[in-house]
Image (cartoon, rainbow over all chains, first blue to last red; front, side):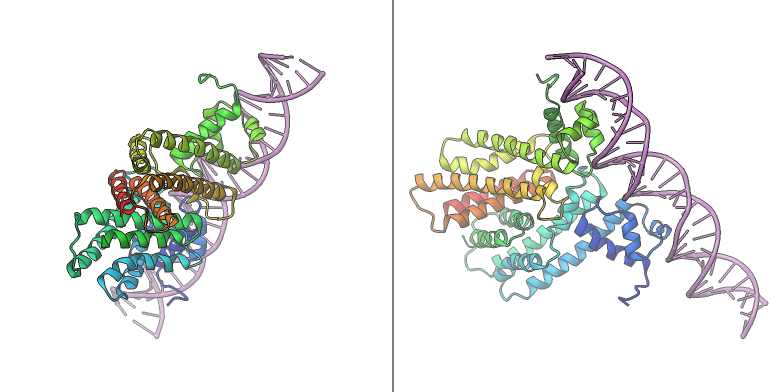
Length: 193
Length: 193
DNA sequence: GCCACAGGACAGACCTGTCTGTCTTTAAGC
DNA sequence: GCTTAAAGACAGACAGGTCTGTCCTGTGGC
């Protein structure tokens, strides 16, 4: 099954998941993608109208995979607060992988200046989904906690989301984990106070 | 002086400041740079050994300019706390410029995977400098404040730095200012508590 | 005369996307 | 069971354009 994946489309997506993340959008050529997918060029263009549309499919696949990673990691924590802060524990684990290169979505977005493109819309959709997930985790903390939050919940969600983005981006730049620990500590304080 | 800048090197740098920021590194060709600089190609390669080294010079110039913007804005605030939080006010002003496209350094860094390259080193140097500046602003808050911080100061600096990165990146992605306001509010809380 | 510069040709590599032709698999008709 | 047709994949040439970097010629200031 994994040796010879029947579906050429699936092979292309899996190659794109690897190459677009590691090398970036512009730095990865169609020729490399089809070569490493063992697919003919005409076959590629039968399945995808353009490199840009492959990138959209790549981001959609990446969204599913990454959110699964995150949710699996978060679900393994015992309490609502541990689950909320577990986002940062997950990022630390994720970053420890040798092939970590920051957020797949932001890396692509920074290569595509135009805001109203299919690619940029896909990035925003992903981040909206992530923010919604943070919101649900915070709601559970709120429901179970003794002290209700003194601030509008949506404002706390926004702060936590900004901390998540900052942690990923800063740890990518430095290749170090201290930004993640700092973000986790800040989140802990913001939620408790 | 600005009509015909005598120095070709200066013209090239100024064009790079515009094009690398707006379009990105790979998306900007040498031909476009020399055309918009009114410079011959051979002249370009007399001043810069490669496109990559131009990028390094671009980042150095950008560092000076951006830190000047930041410091001028911060210095206009009356109190140490207002100056510290003034970082976020500056980012809001900066973002309101129509040509805002996020952090010039992180945008370039995301195009260059290799960590130990001249370009990535320049990005780290810039961020170290920014973090040092945050640290000095926080020290002034600490010196003037009635209540000393109950946490190690360096930890607070790390948190504030992560908030700054998150604010810039998230507002770039969404094209909206709420991440900056959320980061400012979070910073306010972290410093006061 | 010297030197830096503008302008532009050029080499060689690489890019996206199209097209031709061959091979393999599947399935339907009889 | 055999033939035939259709679909889809493979291999690779090709067009048309872009890229970086080198080189050559002409020109103007000193």
